[in-house]
Length: 132
View 1 (cartoon, rainbow, N blue to C red):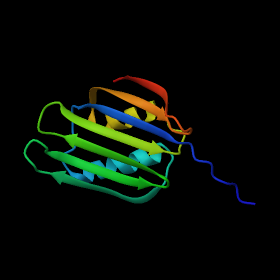
View 2 (cartoon, rainbow, N blue to C red; view 1 turned 60 degrees about the vertical axis):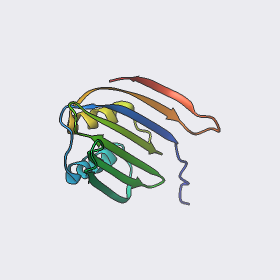
View 3 (cartoon, helix red, strand yellow; view 1 turned 90 degrees about the vertical axis):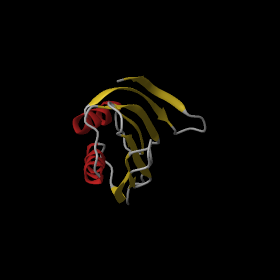
View 4 (cartoon, rainbow, N blue to C red; view 1 turned 120 degrees about the vertical axis):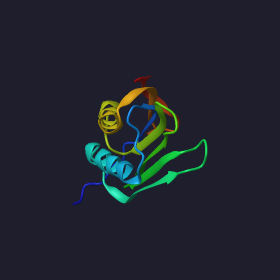
């Protein structure tokens, strides 16, 4: 008999600044693919990224659809350090350290903050929050 999958609903939100922000879609897509591997999930669609040239909103936006999950990142690279917003919703039992290490490895994290939320119950539960 096949084992029934029981999702573990976890959501990590990160806002911070990069020392080496990506300026191409390929670099963001590579990061998203590497991240998915590191948190032990499977890609369902994507990754897909696009560079936005709108004045004041310049930067790459990327997403990847995972099996019952997703990851998204938005980078504003016109200023230094470049600001980013990131979120990962996943059924995997990932850690904040795995994700922050991956962001740092690819883009050189400078500083920021995060909140890690358990969404398994009717009310959200804050697992952890902190600064980078």
